[in-house]
Length: 429
Image (cartoon, rainbow, N blue to C red):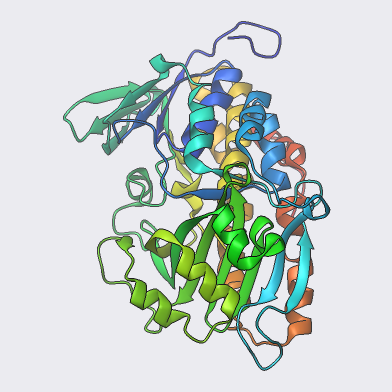
C-alpha cells in the first residue's frame, strides 16, 4: 500500500471493533496511511440498519480527505433535491399543523447548505461502496467483543463472545450507540457508559416517489421538507436517485421514559395516526403512504470525560451518539476517521499510539459533544418546545448549522498534530 509516496508499512496493528460506516471509513483511512488494521464485526456480514442518511458539506469534504475513493463511491449512490433551483437547499421548513403563529403548509424558511444542499444516500448502498475499499483479509465476522485487556507496551487482547481471542497494538471502538467497547473504557458503572433516552421517538418509513408526487405534488415530494409543529416534526427527502421518498416522523413522549428493552418496535398504525391527528393534510397524506414503518426510540450519549484510555479509543457513535436532528452524526464519524487515520499515520511505532489517541480526544471531543447537545436543542426547536415565535425560530435556523458545515478540517488535524508533537498552541473554540 502506497502512502505519502512510499510503500512503508507501520510496525503496529489497529483492531477496529465495528464494521459500520465509522469502522469502515477508519479502516480505509488507515490502509491509505500504511497502518495495518483489522475489522472485527459482531454480525455475520457488513450491514447498516435504517434507510436514508444525510451528509453535509463538512462530511463530503471529510470523505475526500480520508480517501477520494470514498467520495467517489458516495457520489455513485447519492441523491439530491429533484428541482435544479433546490440543489443548494438543505430543507424547506414549513408549518406541519395550524399554530398560533402560522397555518399548516405555510413556508417558514429555506436553509441553504452551501454547494451540497440536501445530499443523502441509502445506508446499505453506501456501506456496499465502503466494503469495496477494504480487503476481505482485513475483516472477520461473528466477533462480538466482550473484553479488552490493555497489555501496556505489548498492546491489547480482545476476548469475543465465541470464546476466541485476538491481539493488536491498540483497539478503536466503532461499534455504535450500543457499544461494547465504550463501557469497557469508561467503566461499567459510569453514568456515561451507556446511552440514555432523549424523550423522543420516531416513525421511519419509505414511500415510492410516484405515489408521493401523486398526493403531495412535485415540489413537496421531490425536495427535502421539514414540517414543524407542537411536540413533533416530520422530515422527508428523496433517496435512491429520486425513486423513493424517505420519511421520519418524530414525537415527544409525554412521560419522557422508554421502558422496553428493544429500541426498534413494529409500528401500530393507530398509534401513529393518533400522534398526528391534529396535523395538516400534507402530513396526514405522508403518514398514510408510509410503507412498513417502524417505531424507533431516540437515544444519545451523555458527554464522557474522555474518548481514550491507554491503548483503547472510541470514535463515531460509540464515542458521541447523537439524535439525528441536525443530520450530522454520520458526518462526524467521517471527520473522526480523517483525524484518527492521519494521526496514526504520523507516528513511527506503537509507542506513539497513546499520544495519538490523546491528541484525537483533545481535538475531537469538544466538537462532537457539542453536536450531541445542539442536536437535542434542535429537536426542541423544531417542536416548538422553546416557544413558537416564528421570527426567533427563523433566526435560529438560519445560523444553526454553520459551525457544523463550515469547519476547516485541515485545521482540526493540524491542531491535533501540534498536540501530538508537543507544540500545542492556545486553546481554540
